[in-house]
Length: 438
Image (cartoon, rainbow, N blue to C red; front, side, top):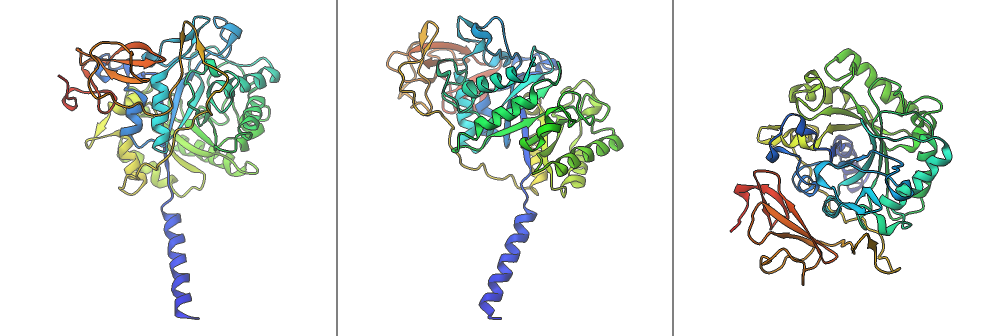
């Protein structure tokens, strides 16, 4: 054989070997509920805004929690209800008190996607009012979610995150019954396939006992009927007897979830180990795993082809669990990638095409969402006024702990969590020592 051909063949073998050796495991975190409030009442420890985590943490997927009411009778046409703790509390219109309008989360979604991260909407949660009475109702709801959060354009004036397009949905079903979820998944996947410009994710967050009581996998339940339509499954290995600290039971159930994925035809979802990000992140301190034990779990699972990585509940707990000078999640990312944090891949915000149907009317104010980072004004505004300013976030003229958001010419005053100051260069609330405020 020609020596050049031999060299090329050897080079290709080495490349393939290293590509397999460098398998990229993912870090998933839930955000939006400020769960850390349960153990930290101090405002400076509360969960920071979404864009902060996308800039400072190596999350691959951020799951926004929660769309906790499917059909809210308080809203006109029984449209969905949402809860994002203190992060967003303003309704999209007076007729829709629990369907929120969240420009700061919209900006965070764009920042995440710009950095190559995926952002999903979690439907359900541990508390809320959700579920379907029929397959027909579930299919209708899939269209509602498509139009309000994903690539649909049927409700542009009511979209909680403006023109930002989420990367998919997550089913965190912890109550009600199993009716309709198979139909919902089929319909939302069908709608996703109409948008060839994006790759959408369908995720699920079942409890660790196998099969999960609401999602399966079991005939008549979504993971059993259409497991192949799911991309990722974030199994909650906490708040249950099969938690990660109960090793024999944990590995037994993890094997069942991995086998389910392997046996799904034509292909099953990646399986993630869900854990609390800090003691207090679940109802039992024994559910939390110190890093040396996470390393043991990773070493035992890393060669499983359907193992995807770890999921953490939640970002707020993670931000408050600093080990070796880094958040808990960052230590795990280093562990999974052999001591090297992979660079954030470049991406671009996912947005709807411009709406040419006229201005978007949302209650008493007319708001036109912006999809590009707003230009920073040359000087700090002299008043809390949006006169002459484009949509965006601005420093308060005389209070470093406050800022305001301009949206459609209307100023929305906001306060940073206690102990934090507005960082006008980075456009988020930050520790005081990082802020140049005068």
